Length: 521
Image 1 (cartoon, rainbow, N blue to C red):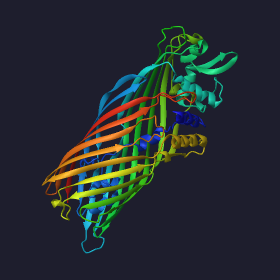
Image 2 (cartoon, one colour):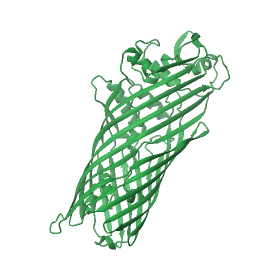
Image 3 (cartoon, rainbow, N blue to C red):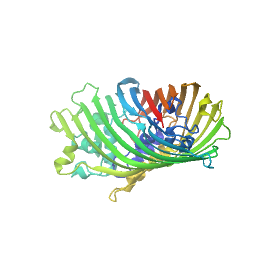
Image 4 (cartoon, rainbow, N blue to C red):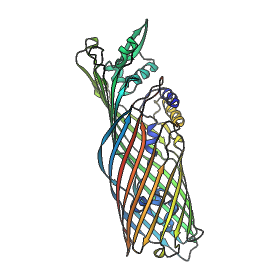
């Protein structure tokens, strides 16, 4: 956990805008969708070829197409989650969402008289990240308070507690609301005045531990939908080359509700409860490129190499929220004190700020191999295959860049240093196979996405178990797949630089049903 002491100190390097290291992981640590066939074999299509989802993995696979086809891949995701926080278990209610796998066209052309016999162009759309979900956890904490994060931020800003005007102060929205509602205030101990959070004020004065019930509820929606264009060709049906350009469109919304309440039973300790709600919206568009090659020395064996450049995103985001605090008549303030974004900004004649910045996602490198059972040139006579991918993702290379000349670059440098320090490169593994029974096919697959965290104490991984059936006859094909995803991760309710940071363990189960309908022409 020492890494997160350093991480917190980096984040206080300058003006608090809105980006945090988790943004880097959210955009890149995911298992993209595909066609039902690709998902059924765990997404292990890097060297397989003849699959439109190759656009998003290894575009050289398009060069296997000798005809043209259209596919559409609707799907349904079913989400449940549970958590453990400070020894307490909790469950999040289930959610169902429509999803879209790879949908688009491949235009293939075959000229047996040319050394470059096959050429193919493809255009498709795919959901490369799904953000729909919910995490909920709660537990009793006698160690720290979320108000301490705002105390640290305010203290390190060097601002007086009665800073005015508050709307222009270089503080996060939460810190501004904490100041306005007196959740944080000055405290004099032994002749020294410092800033303290009200939940622990009496604990500091009496040298005791505060007993607090903490509860966090996070609901997220949106995803990354990527348009892709690709071209590929092969030489003598032995070496296949391809490239694609991707245009990901991101839309992400998150509502976070954090409750903290006093468990002491003391009705005169200047704190009863605090409730903070934050609504965060992010949107933008990016561009990336993929290059790939597949080598087929025999009809049975195939090997592939692929590289994906960082996605360059142009992003904008806005954070709004509200805070309610009951201080039990502290400073003769009766009842609950309420404040929201409008209190800080629009009531003072200001606009709620919108931040714009660029983000560079990680590099991705992939090697893959396939073995075709009864491998012959006539695809209809092949009996199946086994395929595997190994992918390496450089999570720690993610970078945020200011696009506003008025921004404090020290902040972005702090975030980038924190990303580099907290995250590392990780391997992803995918394996799958298919057996053909005349016009019917059966498929199984497995995928494992390694954790991006550099701290060994932080656990996280993603696993997909998949299976499906397929039918192909007279230029029409229909595939049905079920993918069961088991995602393990962690969540920090807040971060402090002067003590160990607590976190919740999260486990989400997602059932995905995907149907692909295709036509060859």
